[in-house]
Length: 284
Image (cartoon, rainbow, N blue to C red; front, side):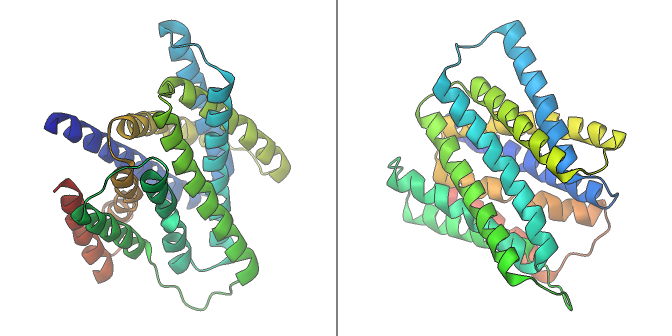
């Protein structure tokens, strides 16, 4: 039993590291003028080809309409959440955008207890709250003298929260229904690719060759992250997994410190240690 718990917690950490790595790559690419929309399209398309190719050569359970619809919706929600988050950064303060969008984890956590009847101890709830608070504190970044279009900004933030929140609930639903994770991944990446292709055509941004290279790398890392994510949700406690995954901002902050030579604020250092404390509480 203890080994099984260790496995799904380890899988949640693999997801956290994978998502944090990809977000760090997105951060790096933005500074070089690459389109985040195009990179997303390439990573979805490459991931779709790889997962579909794997199922073609090694086989999988028959895919049904429910799996296709659920996976496609998950892919579209994830892609749309990222798009809305980018738009929110353009219209409002980053200091509030990231922490507010990070609250989306509350929705799948509540659904895990209310809909899927997961039992969480008081100490584990303390750990969950501490991890969510830490994630919000780590992402806080004060900005000065920036004009804010509050109505468009709040609209984009709300759409991002709803997209990511519903995404988490649907992922837990797929694991609850014991749907084959490979089939979900194929549907997710296929549906997301189609959605992003339409968005790319509407945006009419200039395509660059380097976007395909970056997108391919992100796609491979994404497969690893989501495969571990689905395993964790199938084997473990969703209300603990979601806060752990939300701590992917730790990787972005540490990458900023080590790679981009950014200075860590005191509250970010405190956030890192409080996040570790929250993780300890969830394991008691």
